[in-house]
Image 1 (cartoon, rainbow over the protein chains, first blue to last red):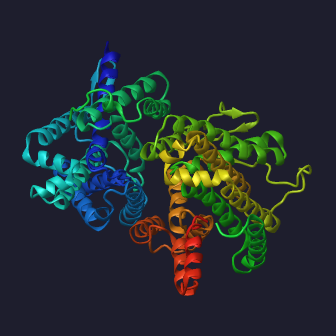
Image 2: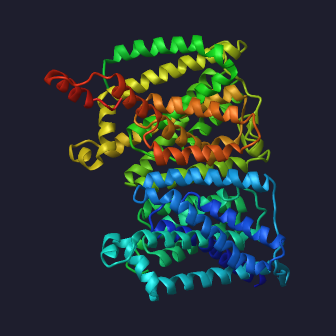
Image 3: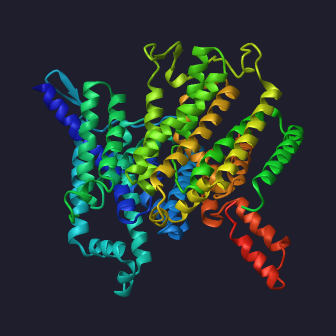
Length: 288
Length: 345
């Protein structure tokens, strides 16, 4: 009984962390069609922003939920103005340029913070269920991921800003004809996407030892989650994160964490072979 | 491509001979050897990406697979000829299977990139986790993160005690690169190569003309992997150790950067890009002021923004503008039109 609860919580946590690390990419790649290979580095910078802020004496929740997203969002904004802006619509070129950016940010972080592991302790203590110890912070991540999904859905579906953003992504010429500037909208959307990446990196920062190269650990997972999700943003994110998270945890508990990771990747390859356009191209069609 | 294949062969032999003679005067042969190996690796991606339009994010997987195959086979056999052949065949077969899965599934662009990326990651994670003594292939322990050291290096075929190393190993690598370059030229001149370029330009049209696009892409993909595998085996011989970092994403990224900087759609570009950037990295590694990764990243971003075609095509067009024959009359114009039809070289 206790074990069932533990496994259930772990599965929810795996799903939630996949949602968290993929949300920023879902906006940047899913909506804007910019293949952002620097996504992992945006998360890494979110982590460093949090740790720096906490070390300066800022409250940890303030640092994670407010400061890190704003800092990373601004970095994203500068990147968009300098580099990405020139490459919209050139899929392969954005991929290569953002790969270069990712290496650039890794080098920058190495020069500033050094090639050592830094970290902060989790602000929420663990507790036990029967004979098992559970990390209390996992619940925080589950809650944040849930709120994130609901928040994104509300903004995209029921606010005017979300409507304009979706419209401009579909037909930027139409949006321009109606008097909105696609350039500005793209800029704002990229800001939101990178802020989400920063938030994810910040929330996960207390759980990992942060090194300048730790972005690489997230990039593949977030990409396969978003791509396997398919055309609809929120439904795709939710279903594919759910699928991969559960597969990962089943194999982790049954065999070992490494096999769990490998199982996730193999599942992704098989899934893409069967549904090359992603899950939501077949199911939940037309949903957001 | 201008000229004929025999003319190509003569040029390749001459240039290789001159470079083998001149380059050791400038750079030590030990460094040169690895530059040649990287050049071959660059050429492998240059072939499938530049001429076949297949952007593979996991070329390092075939490179690493070649190196590991060589190391494992060399420990088990104790002689280097069969392992060298295996190191070419295993990645090629692996790539053929992977390619068949992808191309017959009609996966394209991004999905192709993601799957090759994921496969590289799987290999990297798997090899990294094989530290225990239970991971044995024959007599070879996979060794996890520490890799496999101490295998038989290249020897004269049939004489396991006559090692080829130092300067003579450099000559072997240089000649092999020349041979591979010639084979790639021959492949591109054949109808297979021309159809591959056609598929790159317009896949739908080629399949409507009756060519089996999927099979052709698979074969080209496997050919690229075979070259990468050979480069991997040569690298294993040079480094005398193989480690999981051969499979790493950083390695894959570097190969793509070489091709972009050198120039896609040329045979020479990826080789020059690889050797040049690897040498630049070697020089930069000797200073501590600026981080190496930062500069690599900056180079890639600047090239994508300002010189997306790469150095070699840019230089070629510069050469044409400054020294090429100017059109003066009708005959010259015709000649120019003709040469325009053969840019893909």
